[in-house]
Image 1 (cartoon, rainbow, N blue to C red):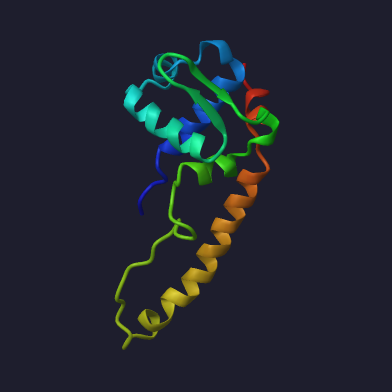
Image 2: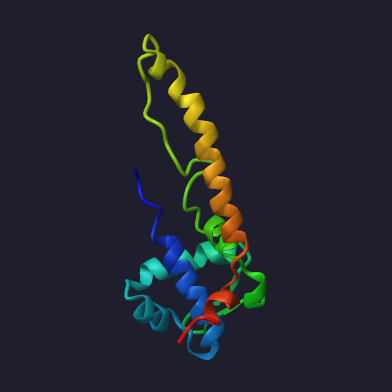
Length: 138
């Protein structure tokens, strides 16, 4: 199974930086903290901006949060960076043998279970805010 994109963890990292060090948050500062290429940071920042989570100032102006950190949930971030297509966290192999009783039934049975698992994960993400994460920093 394909892993969830690292865009999610990088986006959470970026939002935590913007919440804790707003004066320092240039693209280079963020890229150094995340330890990745500034181009990747710009792409993720674009997604966060499009989702209404951040404002980005052109040039070396930096960025800022558009909402207080206690109003940004991990589910907001998950959706903003398009970690997966809608309802497609889990994929099922294609073209099972429908002559087999398992092959004939596995997709429908698994889809229901996997959809419930994804809903549970998204519910959990909706309960955690950026400010809740920041409160746990040491």
